[in-house]
Length: 248
Image 1 (cartoon, rainbow, N blue to C red):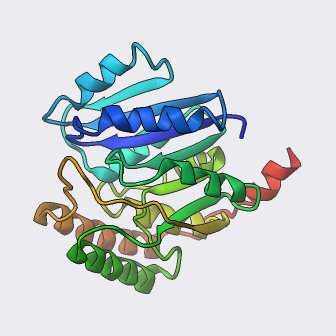
Image 2 (cartoon, one colour):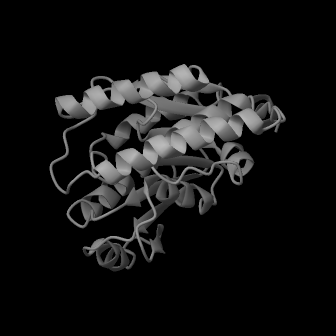
């Protein structure tokens, strides 16, 4: 691992973000000295940005991207990926639900894949969130074919080529982002590898927003729009990024 960007969306995560950034620093010390942490504050109404700004004084690798108003989970994630400058890019949520040391599992597979995605095994969320997640993954698979068993798992590592190729392709700004990102990556010929993530933990601070009615309605609306637009698009030019990277 030569260099890596870690992108994290954050919405009202003032209670988590300080410890989350410290978790990243602690894990990265054993992986590479060349890393950056990109926190995208998606219009938080608490002190998320203030906490990050204070931490920048002691963590020079830390960058803050701010949205004046909340734009949605997908927009926050993708904006973080687009601001990445390193050769590999990783994204996760800032709620501290993952054991970040398991990124080593993803790194181990990156020579054989363009995009390595985790799946929560098991998922430590309330029953209804787990049920909704399974239903969503089933619906996406029915509409677009199989991409991954845990589509919305926020534990994904990729070569920079994947972000650069999809930079102008993905349009979903809400919860449909991960589904569209994976579908478009697969259609473009990028190789996807799945890895079980054992260290998924219950959220201990802050509040999730995925169960809000407005978030759910936006997700279904974007999913329908994506299906319609995909029917009207020509087949994408296919890539062989793994072999290209190996040749370099």
